[in-house]
Amino acid sequence: MEILKVRQIHKIYGEKENKVHALKDVSFTVRQGEFIAIVGTSGSGKSTLLNLIGGLDTPTQGQIIIRGHDIVALNRKELTVFRRRNIGFVFQNYSLMPVLNVYDNVALPVTFDRGKHVDHEYIRELLKELGLWEKRKRYPNELSGGQQQRTALARALANKPALILADEPTGNLDSATTVEVMGLLKESSRKYSQTILMVTHNEALAQACDRIIRIEDGMLYERSSRFTGENTAEGGDRL
Image 1 (cartoon, helix red, strand yellow):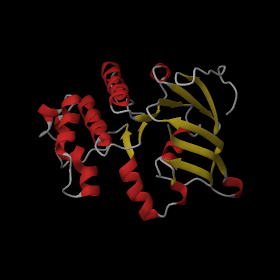
Image 2 (tube, helix red, strand yellow):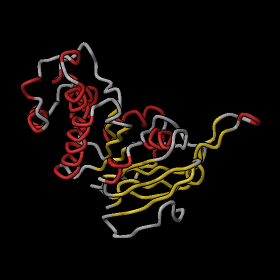
Image 3 (cartoon, one colour):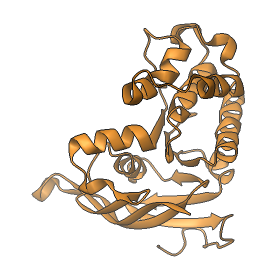
């Protein structure tokens, strides 16, 4: 089942001599359960693309359809509610609330959306699955980098979103913890049929994903899909 359709996206910043065409006619689809790496050099447009899919920015032109809803057409209030219910974010700097313990950080997006109607059993299952149950009363400054990123992943999964968007989620971690977090992402994708788009500069991490989408100069290329068995040559055919 297709869960995301990106159709002819353009993103332009600035005007006249300051105009920057960050993304140029980008189109692709994503199926439920895929784990996709988005790679490219610095300034290529990969983080811009992730921000557009996450509703954190608006394209100059095109459609972004998630679960049948074109988020570009939503007003600000509708987009806020839709994003909260359908998209989970994992950032390089964890973005945890320092005044909340692990459990409350994870439950926070559900509390925003459903008030007191929190599925505590599901959150307990998440925390146990991610090895955080014994740390549930700890605060972010009492955790290691890996534990903080696992907390961020649990928070992203708490609302059972359609998409998890991860922007360099292992960028601040050592190599051993990077392997651990990647394993957790892959296991989450498998166990919860979770769809993950991950921006990374690490080619080895990208190779562990189901598909690699490469962006250069705002244009999109793709290679290797375990779902379709199709491949394009290195730097190959533009989609």
